[in-house]
Every structure is written in structure tokens, then in C-alpha cells.
Length: 439
Length: 173
Image (cartoon, rainbow over all chains, first blue to last red; front, side, top):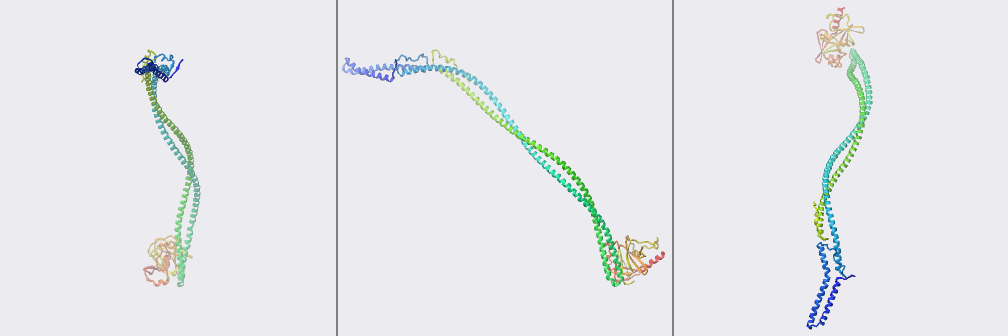
């Protein structure tokens, strides 16, 4: 049967026992045959002695467990875990806090043993893992370096590709611009061809109209020529009339002259008649001169009319030639119209083709821009990958450092764990687990 | 010579005058006819001043060039011609008036006598003639010279010419 009494109560009980004992000391002294004046000091001394003895007993009794506990704690603190069973608490009837502490120390010792064993195993495993990790990290570092080199090459290739794509993009842009220019020129050419066709058709219509008008002019010229010829014939009759007039005027003059002669024969009575006859002569003479003037004018008119006839003939000939020329021009206009129509159609086809070409160039530009964008993104991605690889490399290096540290920690842990003695002769564990050479 | 009206014939720059009362008429002919009675190869029998003959009312009239009569040769136009027919008594004489038909403005007469002043034929009326100075002359076929403002007009002696012609004709016959 076990009773749990706290230490405080034990102290109180001990104190009470000491006090009780000390309180009975004077009575004991009184029962003893001791001088009176010594009784009190002896009682006091006896009480002190009894109190010291009992106190020492109680103290020893109380601190005995703590000494054991302290010893075990010191052993544990020095890493000696060799006690097989710890503190024996089974024989104690009155348990107190030291008993609980001893049980806890026993459990702690047991747990520490298990923990140390576990840490040893873990340290050993950690060391192996550190070595394996070190190997893996080495491989990973080499792989990362290889990846870095590859990534650098990929980055350079991506840069070169981006540069080529930029060049291709510029070239395609130039080609697209040229295609635009060609399209614009083709549009202009189509418009010009259309305008040319329209103008040529207008020209053909105008030439047809001109031909009709030329026909009218030719008919007018022919009519004028006939009129002029008729006029020439009529004018040619005028000299005959003038001859008649001249003859009449001459005869009149002669008649008037003879009348004057006859008047002179009448003497003074014929003077008036002679004057009249003279006036008749003057009139006849004026008539004659007028006829001469008219003759000259008619001569000039005939010359002019002859020139007109010749001119009309020449005009008719020219007009005829003009009509033939206009016919030729019309034929040429028709040919030109047909040709310009073909040109306009060809220009339209060229325009369609150039527009398709322009559309294709625009599509190509878009695709090239997409490719350029992808190339730029590839460069960026490659750069990111390179950065990631660098970071990875750095991380690997950090992992290597960590692995080294882990090995060192493992070693340190092994050293620390080696300080714990689980059983006699197990201290060599530390020497078996030499720290790995981790770099 | 009478003191009546004078008939003036202007030839080039010379003017000849005959009595107007002996001038029967002025006729126009196309050509002159050379009759055998006046046709001769000898210049003495056929003077140069005789140009031919014309017929008027059935009468054959000898035509003379009065300028050549007075020794001045001249180039004559082709026909038609105007001929002043001089008739005195029973004799007739024709005096050709050159250029009278083909007369141009530039060849108009400037006799200063009465008339138009432009024609080759003009007149000096009796009243005017009496105011002019007349200078008798002994020259052949000339009665004298009429002075008209410094220009002298030869007054032809038609009678003598007629007589001369009659002589010639009678000599040929």
C-alpha cells in the first residue's frame, strides 16, 4: 500500500514531531536528577540536539531521493543514460513529489534513451541521406550547369532567331509597303486606264461627231464650190454686159459728139444743145470710166473667185483628206478604245492580284508579327528559364551548402548523440560515423 | 477760114483745129480699107498719112493721120477707130482720131479749150475763138496758129488737104 504525502506535509509533520520532542525535553530533564540551574540549559540543549537529530534524520530522509534524482539528472546531463532501470520507486510507501519526479525522470530517461537511439538512427540515416543528397545535388548541379549552358545556347539561338525574325519582319514590312505602293500604283493605273478608256471612248464619239460634221463641212464646201463656180460663171457674164455698156457709152459719146457738132452748126441757137450734148458726152465718159473701174473690180473679183475656186477645191481636197484622216483617227480611236479596254481589264486584274497580294502581305505581316512576338516571348521565356536555371543553380548550390550543413549537422548530431551513453561500450558509435566530405 | 466754131483734135501733145462747120460727123469704124486707087508700093503715090478709106452713106472717104501729115510719125492703135468726117462741098475727108476709143484717163486731153478738157475731141466756140489771138501761117496745110494760154493750136487747112487728096486720087486713077 502506497500513500502519497506531499513534501510540505512531511516537513510539517517532521516539524511538529521535532517541536513535540523538544517540548518534552524539559520534562525528561526534570525527571532526571540535575541541578536546577542546569535543567533549563540542558533542556534547551537537549531540545536542540533532539531537534537537530530529528531534523537531520528527516532532512536526510527527505533529500535522499533528491540526491538520487540529482545524481540521475547529472548523469543524464552528462549524457550517461546507462542506468538500466533508473530510480527504484517501488519500495517507497510514502510517495511524494520526489517520487513523481523520479518516475518522471525514469520516463524521461527511458524516452531519452529511445530518443537518442532514434536520433542515432536518424543521424545515421540523415548522414546517408546527406551523402545521397550530396551525390544527387552534385548530379543536379552538373545537370543544372548543362541546362544553363543549353539554356544559354537556346537564349542565344532565340536571340538570333528573334533578330532574324525582326529582319524578316522588316523585310516583310518593306514587302508589304511595296505591295501597298504597288497596289496604290495599280489602283492609280486602273483609274488612269479607266479614265483613258473613257476619254478614248469620248474621243471616238467626238471623232464620229467630227466625222459627221466634217461630212457636213465637206458637203458645205462642195456646195460652196458649186456656188463659187456658179458665181464664177455669172461673173464671167458680167464682162459681156460691161462690153455692152461700154459699147453703149461709146456710142452715146459718139452720138453726143455728133450732136455737139450739129449744135455747133446751129450757131448760137445750138449752144444750149451743145452744152447738153457735152454733158451727155461727159456722162458717157463717166460711164465708160465706171465700166473700166467695174471691169478692173470684176477682174479682181474673178481672180479672187478663181482663187476661191482653187481654194474651195483645195479645201474640198483637204476636207476629203481630213475626212479620211478622221476615219483613220476614228479607226485608231476604236483600236485604242479596244486596247485601252484590254488595258483597263488587265489593270483591273492586276489591281485584284495586287489587292490579293496586299492581303497576303498583310496576313504575312500579321503572322510574322505573331512569330516575332512568339520569338520575343521565347527570348523572354528563355531568359526567364535561364534565370530560373540560374536560380535553380543557385538553389542547387544552396542545397549543396545545406546538404553540407546537413552533413555537418548530422555529424554534429552524431557527436552530440554520441555523448549519450546508452550502455557501456556504446561510446564508439561516434567514431564510426565520421562526418561526410560534403562540398 | 471762117470765124466760126473750131473742132479740136488732140494727138499726143499736139492739138489740131478745123472749122467745125466742115465737120460732118464723127464716126467709129473697126478698120480702114485700102482701095486699089490708093494702094501703092510707092511712098510718093501713097503718102504715109493716108491710112485707108471708110464708107459713110455709100461714100468712100479717105482717112488720113493728121499728125503724120505734119511729119510726126506715131504708133497707132488697132481698131475701132474714130474718124472725124470733113465734108466740104462735094469732097470728104476722114481724120483719124487716135486713141479716141481706147482713150484712157492718163491720155486725156489738156487743151484748155471748151469741152470736158479730158477728151481728144473738143471745141472752141466762136465766142471764145474771137477772144483768142490767131496768127496766120504759111506752113503747108496750115491756116495759122491759135494761141490758147501759151499753147498754140494749129488750124488745119482742110481745103488744101482735100485738094491734095483729090490730086493723089486723080493721079492714081
